Length: 410
Image 1: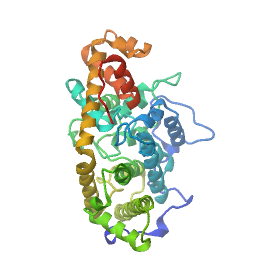
Image 2: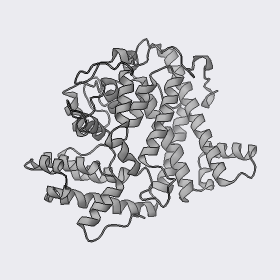
Image 3: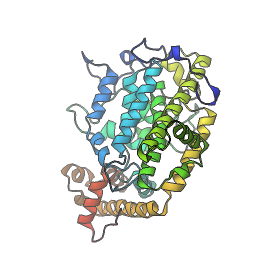
Image 4: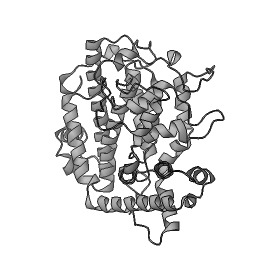
């Protein structure tokens, strides 16, 4: 039984290896890569995409990029890397449940945060303000730049030369960017996406594949659950605060009833595992209901459905809003966090201005050479690329080398 009375058809779930659903993305009929390549004898194209993503410099950098807590005083808080792995696990489980392509779902999940700056959303906000005169900054669009241009590993092309389906999922996993008339849905389409679509049309007016939708909702499930876990670990959240959300209050009562006097660490884990399970079950029930109504016969039918299929029920969406509201008030906007955020934004701003004034400070032959002689807009975008690729630790270390005072991020 799913949340809000929606029933899950267990016989339709693909736990184990079953026949591929007719609406699954098919790697053997992929729309291909920008630069044609021979097929692999041992891996599907979506497997190759996933493997290429894992072997990138951008993937390794995620281990030193902020998820929520900047410069944590401990080793157990999530980073962008551990968050990404958790998202991939949930996305793959959802893909298996629906008999769709697990490798594509996992690949989109693994690449979805590549474009994040150092210091999480704080760094992104600061870099967006700095680049606003030149088109702004969007981490999703930056992820696309990384996998189509900035990763320099292969002899025959820049980027990773991922399949159309993986790039589509990266760009559209949160939904279409324009309507059928080309009108923007949530603000202007970021320039890097517009520019890339001139080379390879990613059909930004349609929904993404079911695999990409699985990755998107997995992201919500993972960070809602694990930001609570890290919030409790840090002391910014207490169990009493969780009582403000009826859904969480119910989970805590369920754990107390079954395990009286359970120590805090185990109590927290029992809440978190139930939260993930209930959210996943809710998503499965909703998706099954919509698939039964729409009756898609191909992956293209999913794109043209005119609605998101893998998503929360109305009741769970309200719970999602309540959890986010609590996290914003108790953690993201806590005075101590805001103080640290201000320092992180100052570091990004200082470095951007320093590199714009003297690109040689980037101390990289590639970046210095490719920045020299550029007009201001192109130069600013190039400096933004360099800054966005930094880890938290590298940004702090370089700031200390260039400036007399570096803000304390603890």
